[in-house]
Length: 351
Image 1 (cartoon, helix red, strand yellow):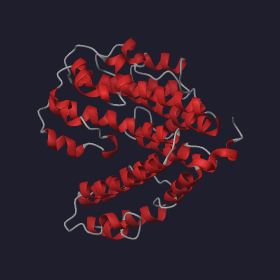
Image 2 (cartoon, one colour):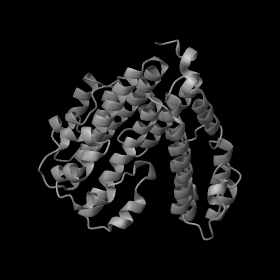
Image 3 (cartoon, helix red, strand yellow):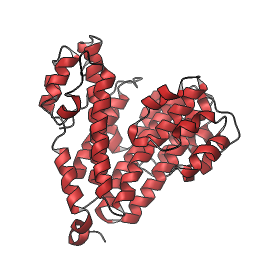
Image 4 (cartoon, helix red, strand yellow):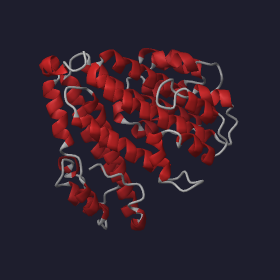
């Protein structure tokens, strides 16, 4: 019942909402990023991060540091926080928190299957998997030859099982099929998460609808741009778009027939929230599109904290922390490769 969450929310959700708002206060500020961008070596970055919440995770790391180590340790902090919240959560918050990790599960499945296709070592691939998307039988993904086997041998016991109904074919796995599988799974996942949030109702439904709709629209744009010049037909492209969001259904019909980035731009500029994103880009340019979308997403995620008594703060916090880790990875890579002139290209300030 919208507007009455305040009466009962704190019985089960009050403690965890306080925890997640406390974690949010520990996110890096613009001042932190400015200091990090001045660093000359990875050890300087470690020294600066030692004064933040990442300090305990990096303090025992010996020199010379690697970018992967910094990212790994920062991700470990996020995983520890997530596990703590999941342990304390009761229904329906525990299910909501589990939904947040399904995207990482899909990415991990695709990583293992693609790596196996290119004959990479399974152990090496497992190390690259995101820890939030791990499940028991993930290592056995390597034996699957086609979608049907992938489902029957491995995924039938995971939360992703219901999402596979749309992409079970007997076709052999190749790069194109794997990418289609990733987008089909993501579509089913986002639609399922959206329905779950609608069922919860109240402020959670209102705020999550906006955040998930933005995610669905961003994926639709990325699918369109990435499929330009490939053998993917217009109908196949249309099937990969989620059945909700601001672009649904008329924007999807127009995106499905786009042949270049400027046509995509023409479609998106009809929608005021996305007009400002494309206004930042010059014509024919798509390299900075990801950053523009990330900046818009961060704005929306920060707004989720303006309201109380809803679950969207947990989703927003996880996403903001993931964006922070992406920022740290970019800064670390620029410092490690002596490309400091490019350090501001991909950093998205959160506050």
